Figure 1: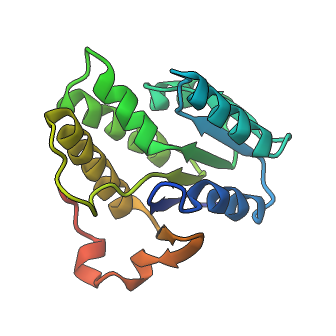
Figure 2: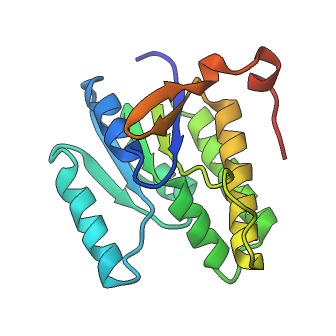
Length: 187
């Protein structure tokens, strides 16, 4: 590998995003660092985390970091492939952190992208698409939807490929996007 690439994998809950990211990465056969953003806030989430750990190849290294991804990645031995799973939980963690506002959250995303640009790495990013439904009734949910939408737009603009997962099927939506849309940054 002589250059970097960013692949964004998005879709609804239980659409097959993580499984696709794992298969996509395993097919490349390179050493992999898995960055997990989930925190076990309750028993159900602890069970989900345990299942995800068990499904990952044993030879992958794992970095568990819920907030400061760029800082943690900079302090870790690099790998040719890095999977970030997932942005949805990362944004949730940032939103619920008392000291983080929208500007600080976007600064964390900027720091991640700065880290990515300083590396020769394949970065595979998993995120949820939450903007296809109705407008949430409460302010916190609307703020979450807005922050995640901004993160996803920025990541998609940077990405070489963007896959939308629907019922376990991957659709390369960046390849289908209009040329003017693929170069545009939204805020």
